Image 1 (cartoon, rainbow, N blue to C red):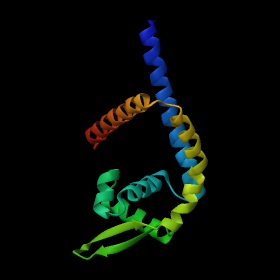
Image 2: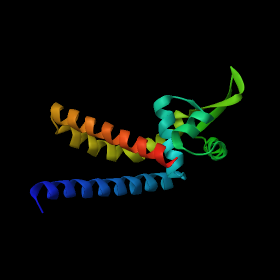
Image 3: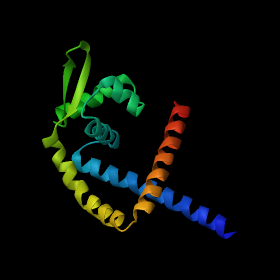
Image 4: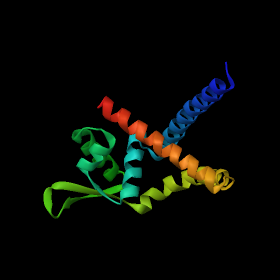
Length: 150
């Protein structure tokens, strides 16, 4: 095996491990909160966007509108979000996260965030720019593959 093949193999193996550990960590946090990983990913999307329609959540997750309706109801009953009729189109529902309810999740993620901040703090601006480009490119690959599978 050439040094290049070994380097590529090491990179791919570490990526698989990171993916597994990320899923396991998010699953453990979700369990602590009484949620599923998909519930948490929807909440994360809502935290970034501020609010969204049920249709936008369905598009973002690839879930059916029926599954999204059930998730919205479950998250609303648990106090994680509020759902209101769109004043411009009463057929649509707009969901918004409840910041107070998200605090427990933020507390569970805080030690992880601190460790990541310490790790990232050791990188140069050039290294961070490279890592950002890499993650964006990986995101594009994931998006393309999700579209292919849908």
